[in-house]
Length: 65
Image 1 (cartoon, helix red, strand yellow):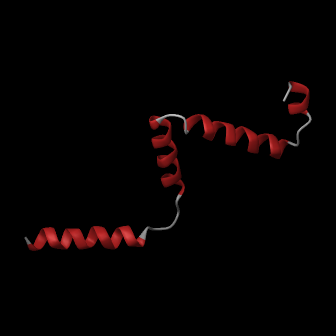
Image 2 (spheres, rainbow, N blue to C red; image 1 turned 120 degrees about the vertical axis):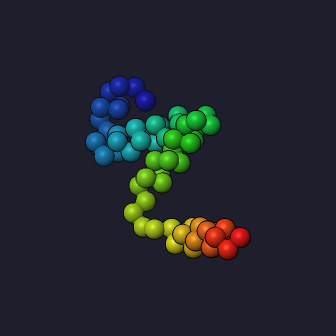
Image 3 (cartoon, helix red, strand yellow; image 1 turned 30 degrees about the vertical axis):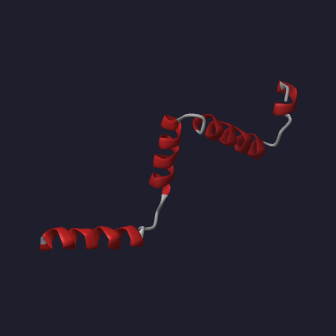
């Protein structure tokens, strides 16, 4: 796309393309994928109950030993 075409895009569509471009650039390296993984994790608002139960079970086994 040339600059004129970009300027004629609806703002929300431009932001979507910008976001997708940013994500694609980070996915090209291992460090970038780690950053994206951490960003996804930080956006989560609900508890991972399966992981909590697994952690608690491991802790109980450790305390019994």
